Length: 298
Ligand SMILES: NC(=O)c1ccc[n+]([C@@H]2O[C@H](COP(=O)([O-])OP(=O)(O)OC[C@H]3O[C@@H](n4cnc5c(N)ncnc54)[C@H](OP(=O)(O)O)[C@@H]3O)[C@@H](O)[C@H]2O)c1
Image 1 (cartoon, rainbow, N blue to C red):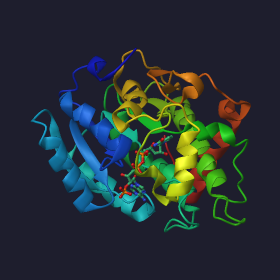
Image 2 (image 1 turned 60 degrees about the vertical axis):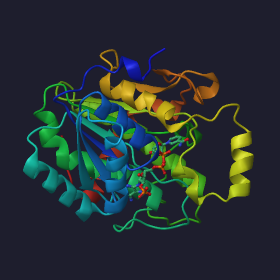
Image 3 (image 1 turned 120 degrees about the horizontal axis):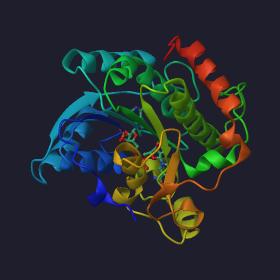
């Protein structure tokens, strides 16, 4: 059973963690920082990001911490974040595409995508594109993308509904964005073979602010269905395993090893649908993302 104590020394490594001000991202950043990494706390809100840095530093000095302002709902803001980062850093060892939004009221990103698809997938696609040159020139660089068990609840990407053209179904749209995250991780690993390693992870079921848009009474019923709901530090383990374990493999998908992959310790995902394995669909999504963002890579 792999846990935080198994993380190798990260001294000298530079890591960006998106959505690092809270939840699973905060705990991912904490573990990397504790092992000596220089971690960029990417947050869309400066106050929340600085507060996270304060909380992390209060536990004692380990690596280094830096705030990065990143709004994944806006392609122009993503470009600015990457430009600022590249002005002061010559390499990037770890990019943890963690930030996410689940079941918000119907809405769109600033560029017109359904909000969950826009933030969870398009935002991270664009971020990785802008940072790709640095990743490519950093020996051993890894990109970890956080998906979800929800990636198995959707059979295909509906290209006629990525800009909220159809009546809104909050969970269908979330699941679409998470299947897209998985396709992205797999396809990046394939396209960038030999330069960077791309791995997907999902945390299981974890108490975080992700459920902020779900009314309390519905949430109680939803959580009651699960035998165990984990704490954020436990939910961060699959991402941390993917980011740091010498045994983690490019193109793999890691999740908790317990029943239903709801809780436990990192292991390769075993609950896999035909859609999740479909390399042609992953490639098709990549081409779509390149077209709509006007960002071509590798
Ligand atoms: N919790 C679970 O059970 C669970 C299960 C499966 C998958 N996941 C995945 O795990 C990842 C982390 O989620 P979490 O559970 O830790 O949720 P969380 O506590 O709500 O954290 C989500 C993070 O994403 C950030 N974020 C949201 N919209 C953003 C935007 N437009 N631009 C930049 N950052 C944005 C949030 O920033 P603010 O604080 O400013 O909103 C926050 O830092 C997500 O990808 C989620 O889909 C979670």
